[in-house]
Image 1 (spheres, rainbow over the protein chains, first blue to last red):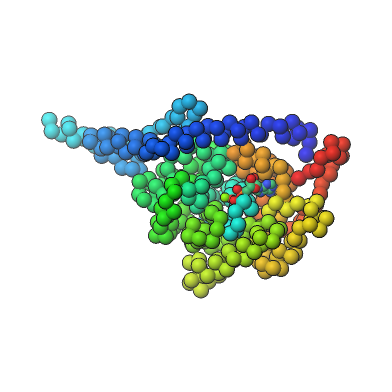
Image 2 (cartoon, rainbow over the protein chains, first blue to last red):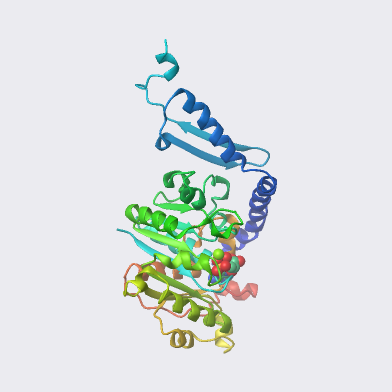
Length: 90
Length: 271
Ligand SMILES: Nc1ncnc2c1ncn2[C@@H]1O[C@H](COP(=O)(O)OP(=O)(O)O)[C@@H](O)[C@H]1O
Ligand SMILES: [Mg+2]
């Protein structure tokens, strides 16, 4: 326990408040909706699958809920060698 | 093959989630690969305590239902690269977890991680039983208080009868972790003593975690206390408990009321 701790002590409640507000705003919104992230993920995957075959292993999905917007990152590795089914028709 | 440790108690609010995060981070800090699994389906909180709540995309139910791969659902801690979290879902469907599904997830985790900590929901029903089902060891979180000790006793009964190990005729290693220990109240004789608790439960002691403001502060900022405040008494007690869990033979020291000069001047009691 030192002087620094005393100053630090005051700091944590506002952080907690902010984290909760962010999280709850997001959770309340999604409570009455289908899970937007999984809907997006599935539809995006379906679109990609129409053109190339990707294994689930090469799909990374990450999320960051922000204050006014959320960021959904989808990182898909598409093998170079695989011919696109569309292209094969020509 | 990794070790599966369930953190359980029967009673709610005794410190299971706090202890899962603190013990898991303490073990991961030694370089061991650690996965924390939140079994509190419907009321997940381990993500919040770990500061990962904004990064949850998939959860254990997605993995069991096959809509996500385990590797996609595991969230890597931003501070410790050996520490991972598998979040619970927020679904209200209590039967979202199946025994086969959980078996499969635990098997996979066990093959990749050195330690798998399962944060149990409160109660003695299905959720709590699934959390302990495949455990090799159990940390029974107990507050030195009558109802908590009674509930721990019931949980010990379940650990000895409803776990896979018990059904195969082996016994699951059990440890009592006394949390929220208030040295001042103990000194005044207002709390069950550690000896009372251990005698009643006849289970060895893993550690004594003092009641501490550091724990609250750690959850406020979303960092396990063993990472954010690692010199404070509660953090040190968790770090020692983690070392005992790994088999080290460390004496348990009873927390005492620490009043430094500065604390006295400020009329404040240390944790
Ligand atoms: N050693 C401690 N000192 C002070 N507060 C604590 C301590 N351990 C846990 N708590 C608090 O007790 C409450 C319940 O803890 P939690 O870990 O969520 O319990 P559980 O998972 O068993 O329901 C939380 O508010 C937590 O911050
Ligand atoms: Mg909990």
